[in-house]
Image (cartoon, rainbow, N blue to C red; front, side, top):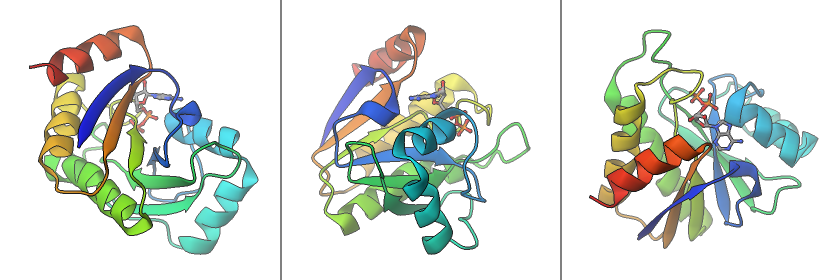
Length: 165
Ligand code: ADP
């Protein structure tokens, strides 16, 4: 699998599936979640309600339509809320592994990830980067291209540095 790093907005990535850093309720939120629901439009929330009436547990992944975005699917994952005391690292790495498993079920061959838990949920930045890169590299998948999308230049530089070592 190719691992790419870009700086940009997760909602405008030209890939089969974009990953949402959702919360357990799966009814929208801030950060990536808010951006994805705004860009995808109301169909994303409708599909969340229909397919996930009880939301998702931390560390799990599930798909919906991507609505108006150019991607075909949103793969929603619930990262651990470090700020709220969820500090089991396997909950973070399983978000990446489970998202790739869902992509395989869908037949998605390109997927874009934000840096899960590194925003509102407060996971320490460098370890969030390590968890993303290590898990994407070590998971067996049919996905051909995984893209890590950094929102700003400093995040881009940090991820790029980590990927090139
Ligand atoms: P979490 O609640 O899992 O911490 P956030 O959405 O708050 O998720 O943030 C996750 C990461 O995504 C942070 O590094 C944040 O800067 C970044 N981010 C926020 N909005 C976007 C966006 N539209 N596209 C890509 N990355 C984003």
